[in-house]
Length: 203
Image (cartoon, rainbow, N blue to C red; front, side, top):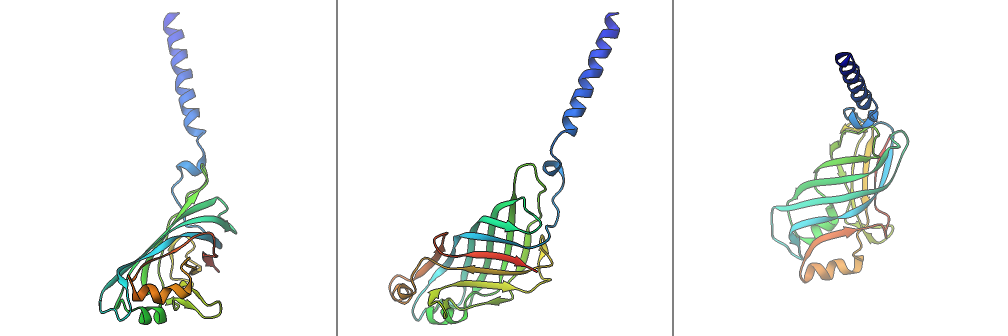
């Protein structure tokens, strides 16, 4: 009788463990997928420049790096997105302030990582190179601007059918840009939620 009781207890224990495993949220254990639809997120981050931009700068290889957090995301399909991060790296051929202000960012390699709500479907990163950029001076609004874009069909991973627009408004006032170039140089441009800065994946 003692042997039968032990066998019954073991069976119950195994069944309980099995049920516990199957009760885990599907999104937590499922492999990431490519997200679809459209999504827009606010940006908090910076553009780092080394060596610094200067008036009549003579450097011929200038490393630029964008790092930003994603906040306040809205999405048509992947509503589980709650944030994420953006990184982009590239190289300018000059650190002359006037030249860079007129031409904007170089071609850069971008990676967007998506953060989702706990227990929901995870998403693959979005990877792309920008095919377009704008000047650092936004003529209509007379502000500094960090702008980059790429056409639909050039993204790999999540939102690979979309075009991308990165549009950040640095906190440095436009009137400080040239004086800073003339003095210590512009080592970075920062943006936060105080001014509209967004990245959008659009159909």
